[in-house]
Image (cartoon, rainbow, N blue to C red; front, side, top):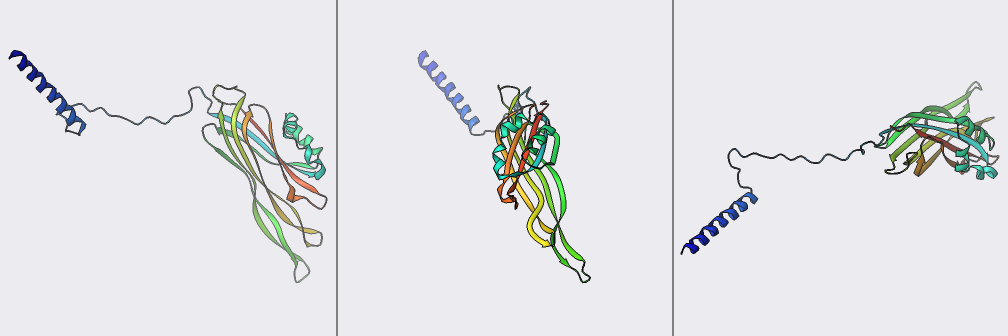
Length: 238
């Protein structure tokens, strides 16, 4: 009889525990004075501790009027090797054809998001010309946005060499030049050349990197095409 009563007591106690657990799972009201434990969502992952967050970005876009027979001379690695300074690269490009620096950019960039840098402005271009009542030429001028848009995404290579980063670069270049259509004696209408240079991969830190593109459609009557060359240097990772 005593053993039977103990069994009944344990059974009742076990049932009470199960009932309490069921009520808690069903959202039963809390007992007065119960302490609530607040939970917060995990903070979004940021840059790794000790990883650089900024860098210095410098870029120059050059334009070279290059004969078709010399296009093969636009070898990116070879140009990069000769591009220790901007003047050195410009001198090397001048061996291929008339060269000038079009646009320059220099500023700090973030290593945690995409950066955009815009250089350039609006420039007038003669679109048409006619002779006025007194024999004077009347020109119709239009303004166009020309320049370079740099899109830069850079991230350190975790566990990799400090002198390299992983990068995604894109440069949209627009440039004004003389066209082929004559609108007045000795005067030709202007045209806008647009090109995009891009690269995705490993980028050296503290050393020049070169991208090139040739606008074959821009070839003039002498078969000279416009080649656009961009010299990039990434440094001072902090």
